[in-house]
Length: 146
Image 1 (cartoon, rainbow, N blue to C red):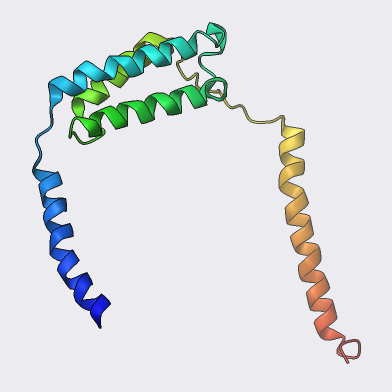
Image 2: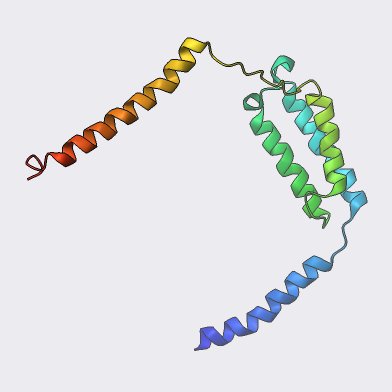
């Protein structure tokens, strides 16, 4: 019973603390002052990756994850939500710096040759017909089902 009363007293305190956190204003100038450090750290890490591999995310995913966490941490330290338009603008600048040549090339799909296409169509059709025939034949032979 005592624990339940203590929980009831803690609930308003938690609600007030959450409300206080929501009403803090975003210190945009502090955030914009701190974000370039995240960019510099990411830039230093990207120097370890061959520039020809900058379009291959698996080559630098850990560095990018650290960069993302850094920008989120700095935005939160400045009482700003993340992502926000200013942080997104900064991140976009980093993307332009490192990934501007990483355009996705659309793959042009072609139909296979007719011989392969006909084979790929006929095999499932023939298997379906064979299975139907087998089911009908077995259902007419009630002596095997015993």
